[in-house]
Image (cartoon, rainbow, N blue to C red):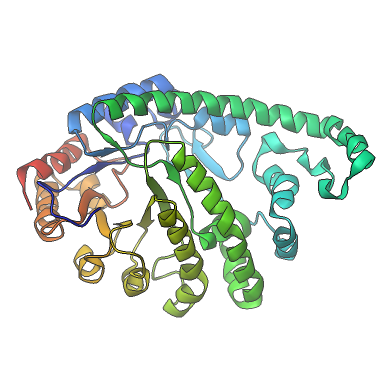
Length: 395
């Protein structure tokens, strides 16, 4: 990250459901069993000996809490898809176009009374909450009766049950993290962040909605993107500061070249995301955006960050081109092809890793990883080849 040449190129271990392949169990079994996931994570990390790790609970053992929350935005193994099928996000309109003003006026009130009941079955009933800032003095006291409304009582009971399950998941994850930090491994992320455009596009308006808003409601959209920034930063900073890691992982969904023109990227996507990046950097944290798909046309724009303060993880962008633009500005991470890891031979994986190590990693500022971590279906021998390569070849 410091953009200096290390003794060897470091390697990261990040995956989601691949542990099931490693352990010979179904995705569903993995998602619901904290202890089994920890055992497989322990076995994998000790075998591959990465420099950077992520606990297997973080993106994997979510079945119980998703079920307790009755989460509506996602299908997961055994819930909407087969036991050995991956997550499937449900792209829908979760905020109506006429609700922009309501969100802009009171994001918290909108989230509680509208958004949460739409995406969490456990929160259904919060619609009955009144506009609390309008309650005052004795009216506030008498207004407490709203919390005795049967629907609200039911919602709080459901959210408590989901929260208790989330606590059990986090306790298991923290125990695993302490163990491997004690062994000298570096935790790969202390929090997960998001780009403002992606928050609105993915989780509020949906793809069709936000693409329409680019043309029909550009001012409302821009105002909403700005409005999300302090909430995104507060959540990411507080979570990361409570952990032992300074890294904030940020998957980027709407940044790729084929989603919008460079002009629209520079108008709608990049300015607010840069504010998120700078807010994290100013909090002494390290943003790690995962630039999904191909972002080649964005490279000169996204180079506008302080040197040595971020890690840019690329999925399909040509790393040689990225290094020519970003070398001396950001550390690069990636990008062993998932197709190669899934269908290639160990020898082909070795050759690809050698090329990355000896070209991109030649002068430092590079972390070897899969393009999106280890894909769910990668043969174990190909994953072994990737981790062996970093010790065979010295940049």
